[in-house]
Image (cartoon, rainbow, N blue to C red):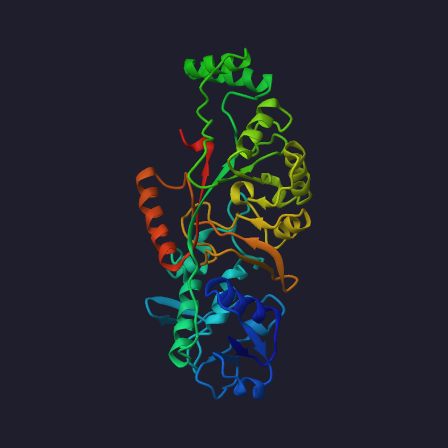
Length: 400
């Protein structure tokens, strides 16, 4: 596949490689030479602001030729059943599909300084362009990629592509490993007093049993082998208001980590405050590596709390290769409108990185159980149709 562009920018290279290599599973090359392009017999398309006399020309808007971050003022047009942005007047496509894709997968809108954030400093789904246009539960990036592929196929019958394989990944966050075990004495004493004051006598008795070293059924102990290999993201931070796991120094913690390592992959769950104090990421990762005596390369942020690009730069610095944080905390849907693993693009540095993002579909505890099941099935069907990774975040402490 050959793409003619007036200039090969980092944004153009990144966007078209995500479209063709990550989604359509076909190679892509670029040229700035019109003679080379016209002489080529392979499937090809042109991407430029000015017309090119070729069957597949996509009129380009400025976004992929820029190097800075500029707040976008959108005009909207309908495409099939969806309202999109970056409309164009000429060319084979009604919009600059490449600009739409880049805007979504780079999370461009999350870099704006005037964004309204929630109480935890997180960008909310309702402020996203996808939510406001009503397709936050649709994989628009995949649909645009397929539209490009079908157009190319109409003019170049030998153009071949295939959609991603559907895969369902089981991922779990260990925010609090146990309700009773592994807690310090002062925590247990406070918990017993609180339970008695609220007439929760069985709860108080279980804390006392755990303190005395007696066997107790722990409702958070939901760690079992599964049909496929799950991933557990484990919190190793110091105890804070929002970080409440048992200490990484305890025997209960170490025993659990070794137990999980027998049937799952292990990742780090950087603490609540690591999104601001990014040095915590490397510190907490080293703690887990020292316990396991193995290298940790997967990560997901606690509370899904992160900042663009600071958190992701810190993950790269800490040696993380794959992050699983890209999802919504108060809604279900596809934060970047894509579900294939793809590289993080640092908009501040205007460059592609080696960090691979694995987008989430939804998190447990957001909806009631009946609603959650309906929405989960809706999202799973969307991913099955388009292909890619269907990832749901669950907590061992919420399965009670």
